[in-house]
Amino acid sequence: MKTLRVHVNGIELQVEDYEHSGEAVIFLHFSGANLMMWRPAVPFFQDNFRLVMLDLRGHGRSDRPETGYHIDQMARDVAELMTHLQVERAHVIGSSLGAEVGLCLAANFPERVISLVCDGALASEFGPYGLWEGSEAAFKAHAVDQLEKMRQKPEKVYSSVDAFVDSRREIFEKHIGWNEAVEAMERYAIEKIGESQYAPRFNRQAMIRYMTHYYHYRLEDYYKKVTCPILMVREDEEPENERELIAMQRLRDLAREAKIVPVDDWMHPYGWLLDPAGICRVIIKFLTQVAVS
Image (cartoon, rainbow, N blue to C red):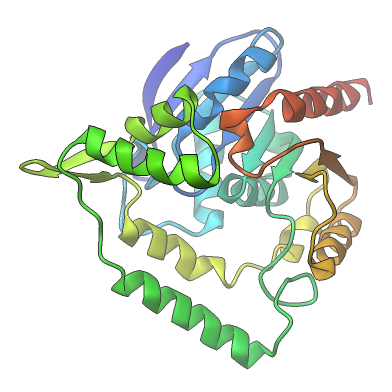
């Protein structure tokens, strides 16, 4: 595995490249995560594929510019990275934010994407393919309110890296689960911002810059442009909100070739860190079918 920094679109991205003669698979992490989230999945893919993992702008050890947090821009980052790495075409696996970026990459650079796996990006926030059940005016007010709450929320600062990790462990153990992979991901992306002051690299300002665009995304505009096969993965239970399932199915129907597959015992998005075996088997089967077709 090679670790490198790659200059794209005026910034530098942190990249890990597991070289192999097989087709490339690009992994795109969820919001607030970083390339370390994919480490538990590596053993399932590395014997047959070239694996490329990166920290999206503002995340991990990549640069954190003041602009460029729309998924269109982040998709251009990935496309330029592929050019730098001499990856002509690749399978793309994305989780949450990474699924949005992957969807945009497949829609706007169709010649670069062999197939797309979406663990997330399964419904818009608003509109005929969205989750919001109220009026457009109410949704806009909701978006403004949520962004204002983010701006008012104080930035947490920690006395040490261990203090940050301990705080995250307490939250994860209570609600999700904790293991060495989760700790490695959390520990990876902490920066020193002052004397005995540490904070996550993906800070409040970066989150706000991303979320400012997020509420305006209409994923249907991307799905209808994608020509490669899409695997849309979801948790194995039916969504409690029927509107969510309907939105997912309608987005599927917009694409040229897409299918929704429930994954047994899947927990989005932290299953990649806690128990990725099930979803990796589903994805490898999908990639095999894409290769055959």
